[in-house]
Length: 113
Image (cartoon, rainbow, N blue to C red; front, side):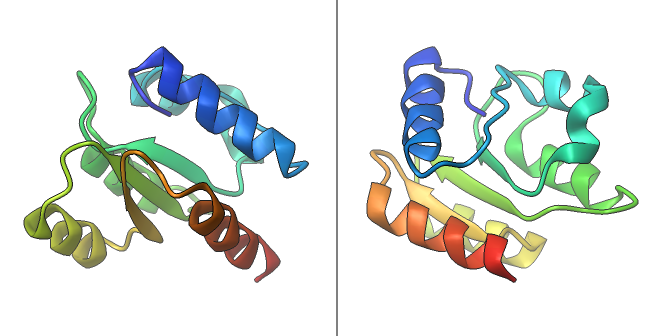
């Protein structure tokens, strides 16, 4: 999920190319309000989004009956954001542009657990 449509479409296309089923959301609010969220096995989200940001989304997901891993991507990667993501329990952290091979490898490892 990303508020930038180009990034959303590129990321979803990458994940579909690896034969994963993808649900695309334009915001955290849309994801949190979707009844299909119980089908999710993983969330890839931007940190900086209007309204509910990535960290607030992560905290909401951690309260679900069956929480799912969250991987963050951001155009504004800093050591502080990385440390905050790790402390919050994020499953991964990538700066934009995302290293596609590393992202696919991490998702594959997470989904095989």
